[in-house]
Amino acid sequence: MSSGVALPRALPGAGVVRVPLVAAALTGAAALLHLLGSEQLGEALAYRREAVTGGQPWRLLTGHLVHFGDAHAFGDILPCFVWAALVEGLFSRRLAAWTALWTALATGLVVLALCPEVGSYRGLSALNCAFGSQLLLLGMWDRTERRDRAGAALVALAAVAYIGKTLYENVSGVALLAPDLGPGVLLLPEAHLVGTAVGIVAAAPCLLAPGPTTAAIVLDRPHVVKHPQRGG
Image 1 (tube, rainbow, N blue to C red):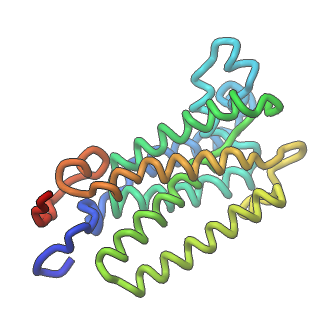
Image 2: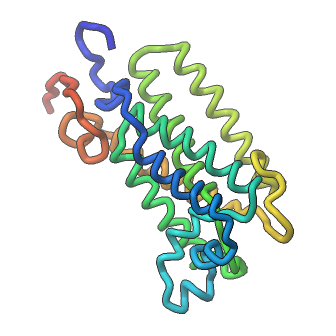
């Protein structure tokens, strides 16, 4: 922000670029596991319902790091790095880390509880949706509060494109960035919905109370934005 009085509700972490360590670690691990090319390793880490209920709960998390094939891996890992890096770099490393953890866990639990027909699940698509929705929500808020109409318009267009992509995938059952997931592999819309919901919920504290006290829960605080006092 230029010199002068800070806007009252600008996000404290916005505009301070950070090295995307969380994004690099998350997608780097997924890329490494895929490049190792071992189906045995993939099977050992993938979400498998009978394995989770049989005493291997870590698969709720590790299943997101493995993929069914090259197209699936490329269509997941590259956009996940971009979205996660933008959330982490522009807003908060802490927010990116917690979003990744809670999205992975929530998706695994929802699939386990509500999708008994799903025997196996792999991929980062839920995290893609979480980071994507989060980036759009925080970006729109920040650009609007900074009275950046051009920036807000661009974010709004991106949001429309994101919503359109999500609706297309849920209706068609085809992943736009990875239309061929492999023989017998189907898109799981529930994972996208869970990811979107977790992303929005995780970003909510930033929007509801982005002041110096509450925002510190989720936002990195490289500097303090002063806020006017309000009386009751």
